[in-house]
Each structure stands twice: as structure tokens, then as C-alpha cells.
Length: 245
Image (cartoon, rainbow, N blue to C red; front, side, top):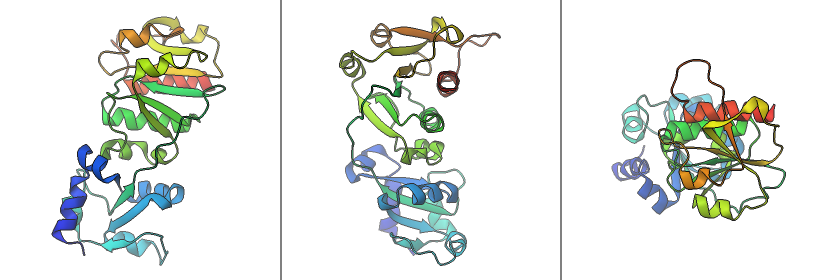
């Protein structure tokens, strides 16, 4: 059973200012939590669960406390429209230095502000073996509940970095920059890179001009129909599929 003060504290982690202050974030649902237990059990601070979830664990012993709560209590602390059995409070990972860029493909996001898009792009990166995603400071918070939920566990395997984009790019003179743009070259006509920085822009404005002008190659996904543009996450998936397969 969790007290009112404790429930209110967990609920507050839905807001970025409280996540930043406490160094914590939340994740919900049996499937997502199973991924996180497998990948980063050391970061799990506390689990709050219905007896439905705890009973299904069949006596497993975890290195973190588990508190039984009621459906009403789960509804109070959940960030989901339909709460799902279990909510975990996790410690944010320690910020790690960027690993080498040579020989690697890096996804770089310029002001991707929709949490669902950011979470899906992190999941796409994980699928295609991209271990690092660089975000401009205008991107959504990668530890917001909706982003974490959308990653379906990939948040535990993909390293995120928030940077001043133009400044960071200027510090990478030896790595080729590829930018997704409507006026770019057909991706089918561009040799597949084995290393480089792949830039995806904002959902409505695309890549800002000062970043786009730094690109060595602009990439365009061929359009057959009449749609004005592609969703940022869809574009990232198509580009990574072409580049990595």
C-alpha cells in the first residue's frame, strides 16, 4: 500500500522539472517493464503493481522493492489513459561520453518535438543497430512517459545525447552529414554510407537552414502519390532501412 504523499510524488514525475530535479523517470506496463528488468535492473528504483502482476512473477526475487497497490492508486499515478498493471520508477542513467563517430551511423534529430515520434525513432535506431541518437535541445525529453512508452524498451539500449546542434556539427569535420530533405537526391541513387550522421528535421518545419547548409548530401525519399510530406519517424525508418540493408 502506498501513502498519499508517495502517490503524489510519483505522479509529479510526469513533469520534466520534477524528473530533472529527482533524476528519475517512470515506465508502465508488463511488457515494457520486462524489457527494462532484463536490460537495466540496476536503474529500477521501485515498482508499484497490482496483485495481477505480482502473482504472475511466480515468486521471482528482484533487486528492487515492489509495493502492492490498488487499481484506484494505479490510476492516480499512471500517465496512461488505460493503466496497465504495473508502474516502475527508474533512475536516469549517468550521462556517458559520445563513443567514436568514425565507422558508425548516427541519427541526429533537429527539434523533433512530438514524444511519440521521438520514442518511435529511438525504437527504429535500436532495430537497425544504431546505438546513438543525438538530439537538439529543442527535441522532446527522452524520459517523458510517452517517449519511454513509445520506445518499448529501446530506451535501455540506445544512448541519447542532447547538444547545441550547429555547434556540435561544427566539431565533427571528418564525418559526412546526410540530411533528409524534399529537394535532395533520390536515396536510390546515393551510395549507401557505412558511416555518417543522418539528420531528421522537425515535424512541420524540417531541418533548420543553418543545420541544412552543413549537410554534405541531401537525401530525398521518392514520392509517388500526392502527400505533402512524411512523418518524421516514418522518414527515419525508410532512410535507415535503405542505408543499413
